[in-house]
Each structure stands twice: as C-alpha cells, then as structure tokens.
Amino acid sequence: MKVLVVDDDFMVAKLHSRYVSAMDGFTVVGVAHSGAEALRAAERLWPDLVLLDIYLPDMDGIAVLRELRAAEERDRRPNSVDALFITAARDAGVIRAALRAGALHYLIKPFSQAALQEQLRHVASLRSRLAGLGEARQEDVDHIFGTRPPGSRGLPKGLAPHTADLVERVLRAHADGLSATECAEAGALSRVSARRYLEYFATTGRAEITLRYGGTGRPERRYRWRG
Image (cartoon, rainbow, N blue to C red):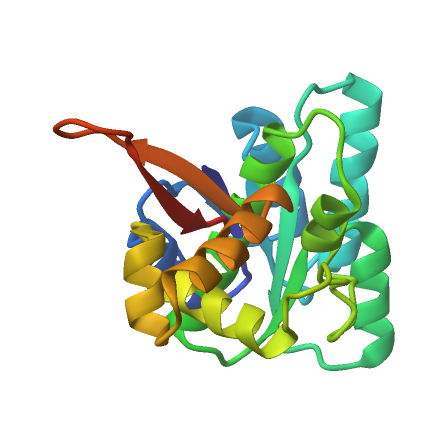
C-alpha cells in the first residue's frame, strides 16, 4: 500500500514515515508539509492512503481531502485514496467535518507507534475485504462500517454470545489460523462446540477456511480471523 504522509512539522512527518515503513506491505511514497504540496504529490503519486494533519500552513487538512475527492471525480480515477487524519485537533466539530469529508479514522496526537500501526492494519483489512466482495451481506457491511452495536450480532439458535466471544478471541490470538481441535484446546471447549462457532464465523465472512493436506484421509480445515 502506497502512503503519502502530510504534516507541517518535518520531524513529526519523519517519525510517522518511520512508523509506516516498519509495517509489511506499506511504503511511504512521498512526504508533504503543506496542503498545496499534498495535492501536487497526490496527483503525481496516486497513493492508496494519505496520513493527513488538520493544521497545515496554507489550508486545513479537511479542505485537502475535499480537493482530493473533487480531483478524483474530475479525473475519473479508478481507485480512490483513503485518508487517515493524524492531528492534535480535538474539537468535535472538526472531527465531524473529517468524518463527513470521508476520513476512515482520526488519531489524536500524541499516540504510540502501535496505535498508528493498528489503524494501518485496519485500513489494509478494509481495502482487502472490499476488493474481494461481489455482493455484500449485512455482516460484511457491519464489519466495514463498524455500525452493529454490541449484543446485536444475531447468533443462530444454540450459539451463546459469551462462547462466540471466546472463540473470536482465540481466533484473533492465532493470526496464522488453527484447527477446530486446536481452538477447542485453547478455549477449553469440546471439539464439536468449537467447530460450530468456527463454521458460523466462516459462513458470516468473519473467518476464512483453508485446507491442509497431508497423508491419507480428508484434509484438515483450518480457520483464520479476517481483519
């Protein structure tokens, strides 16, 4: 993923660039220190993601994002740039304006390297999920927008929310995936119970299944949390 870093503070821009470059799959393709520089760089580089400050010397970051959106419409670009605001601005009106302009998220300075990298992983997950969607299910939409309130996941009859949460935590803790047997051991569940929840997450798009072949007999089904 190509990233453009926009911040009027040279040292802060350098620090954030280092955070991004430490992530697999992310490349800093440019750095800008003003709104005009950011717009020129975006036109030249076509980044996938812009890390955008609000306070810039010539125009605010929200105006920059609006200009980027207008340019996409004008030039009919096939791929839109995503924006993640990174700023010290705490005013609720500014946050609302950023949301309405199309920002994916908003990080308030100061923050840790881990906080930024978590958001980068989130952006990558969203882009990957959208790229792989044909016709979306409601579960896909809820995942992308993060709009479903807690407790409203609508579990099928016979599945309990607290066990679903347990299996989800186990899946998230094993990024490389695991089998139903391994999930059962990690969560102190029966294999049959673990398998039911794993299959539920797979059918609702929150987990993916891969098959491991080896020896004789049927291949082993392995489950990995998506995102």
